[in-house]
Length: 184
Image (cartoon, rainbow, N blue to C red; front, side):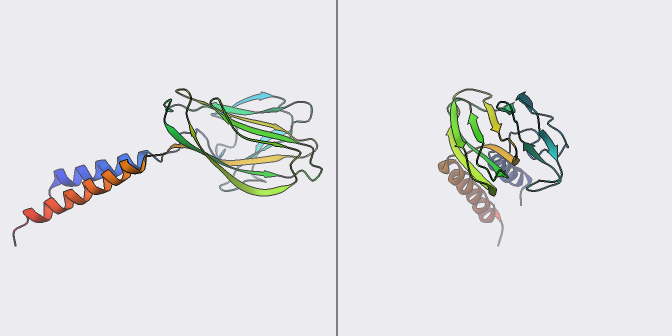
């Protein structure tokens, strides 16, 4: 196969994969701390631990007791007007249903829970149009006397189906062109 054609196929494939790249720094807290994130509000009983990870070695736990507290991160590389998928895994160890949780991306509140019963790790996933460049991902917790656990946070661009189809058709066309050139 011609090297130029192989290069073009690799370039198109990498463009498709780039659309699914996670834009969150330290999404699974695998650094063992909150690097990449900014803590705010009541940070009591909030830390990164190996005891309650969904995947990997570490996960984050939040149990503010006086006021709401949490983490946020300015997601670099977000473009206003584009569609993004925001997902994360959350569990609630509170059996008293005395808690609050919310998550927002840019100006959109994605989920708000109040007095939620205990539940195991559950994946939440939302498609949202970014309202600004470099949108803020904001998690808020309140959970005395227990904890919410958070892990595997992901924000990625949702490619338009037409773009993926065009990439596939382009790759097939390149392969077809190479086959026509080969002598029989």
